[in-house]
Length: 115
Image 1: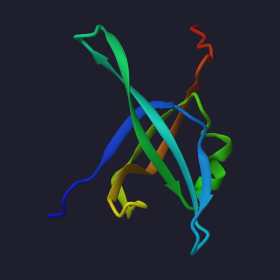
Image 2: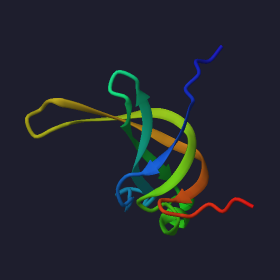
Image 3: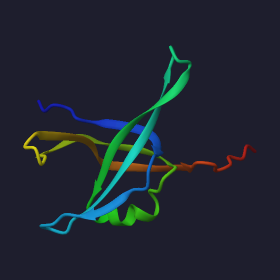
């Protein structure tokens, strides 16, 4: 049986996303940070946890107009890790969510009308 690596989060895009392309194949990569608020009982307030997220391929280019700072998203995907050696020769590991599913929510400040 395979191990399971699945994550689903709802939160807001916390900074303007960046669209970059890989050097070798020119594949589009849209990177953004998602803030997921959690209630902290001891502090009696919500505190955000920030998750690095990436969308890869043609979909990344299509989402650049939609995925903007402040928009609420529900994402599904899997945890991945990139690693590299920095200028001092120390291995650095960066964890991120490789997004496979995305549902667009409201922008901050959108009014919700109750009928």
